Length: 279
Length: 200
Image (cartoon, rainbow over all chains, first blue to last red; front, side, top):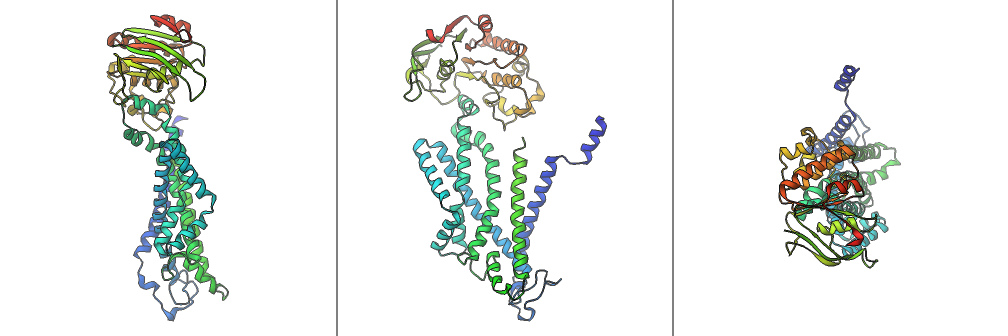
């Protein structure tokens, strides 16, 4: 009985290992997209009027557009760019959330009320509207989008961090730590941070797809990245004009790829949550 | 070296006074029992003695000097629920050594087994965790120990073993101990004098 159990555990993975394996392969997949996007030759998306409007084939897996640009290259580059924007935007948002959330929990009653009010204020307006406003005010482009995203996506995470810090701050093990003569910094680093890491990590990955979709949406509306850059939002908005002439591949493959990448991030977030909260 | 509470009064915000004008002296080599009906402020008084809560009135002094909040506190409090008093994301070894490195002898007398050190807190029972909390609080600079219902959650055998170990240390180090408990038998066995919180 016991030996048969042992055999099973040796040859099949347990759930934790399976989760870890999936997590690992998903992350590798995303890194591949970024790397391929960065390494692909710019020449492949140069205008080539001979190969215009080609249907998907082995030479051009996603077809070519009305200027003869290879859609596969454009899509991958666009995804890579989107992931980059997502990364910077998400990191900015997380930093704001971390600082404000911790400050609200530590600064006492008045600071808490001010920051909670700020969180409620940002949550009460649809953040796509705020994002468009900020991106527009900053003149659009890469900078406008990144700053806009960083400034609009922090409130819900800040709220979670605030509660978490409050809970740990009043917990008995922190009081014991104070009795042992540990400094506030030591406690923040050793007691609080380990509790915040899972929240921040999961929040980060779940923010990512959100950010990418918003970046595409704002770019699609013409307030984001400039038209010559191979961003997914630009590809989609351009292809709208050619859909009616039967060039379905212009929108289909980039849209599908965007969906896959977003789902991948969602999956990573889920798996990460399972992985970190299992013990 | 004596721990003195002078004219202590406490209330939450503007609520009614939980207690007022409490005077209490704890000397080394003394075990004092503290009893009283639930909700009369035994735990709050313990927290004030250990410097975790500031009294609204009065002062706590050690050797006639005010205690300051920095550095290792000579008055250590042991809580009722060990599960809450350890960080669930730390291994037992780190928890045990947070304040000082307990020696082998103490660990043996408290019945802490070597292999427990590599475990997470949720892999140990309440009794086993409480042994760690006791060992952790018995640092070389601990002058007074406040056991707030320290063994209430534990079975009789564990209770006896933990108290045996604490009493050994108590004799060796000339500490003062406050025991809060509802168990009359335990208080009777351990304490040199017993105080009812209402009579303070």
